[in-house]
Image 1: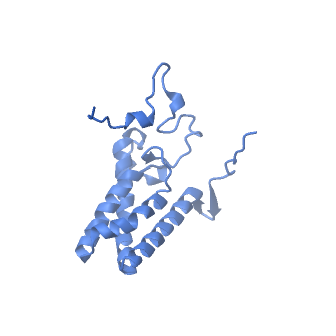
Image 2: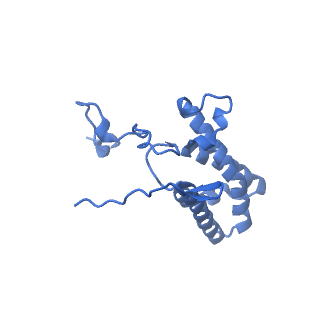
Image 3: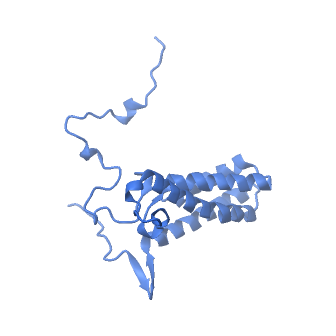
Length: 182
């Protein structure tokens, strides 16, 4: 018997004219958890809570901009064709790695301006990045629409979508260094 968890009947909650989507709510929870983890680890290193909050204040919005830029650049065909298309975040599309890159860049700039030890701060923040991105794995570009509802495969595909006859090298052999010793 195969066990499964069915999809919820809706993807959000309507509060009058405002719709709160579950994925957005969980992103907010993930970011709050990431800030809490970074704060705790940074304070353990002797840093101040206020610096973490200042970095988040600048890095989070920069991360959203970077995520949208990454999506627009890598998925131009999915961007609405109107002049406002690249700005249409309500139509979906954020690239996780663009968000991490831009947020990290801005965070490093804030840390340097405050004279903080960037390497120690990044060490404190590293585990929180996995929490903030939800450690979903898969492709670096995500879309806020449901791929199965669009009746097409989601980005990245799976190993079962390879062409017939295409061979795969096991991961352990693919990245193994060969020794030059006899």
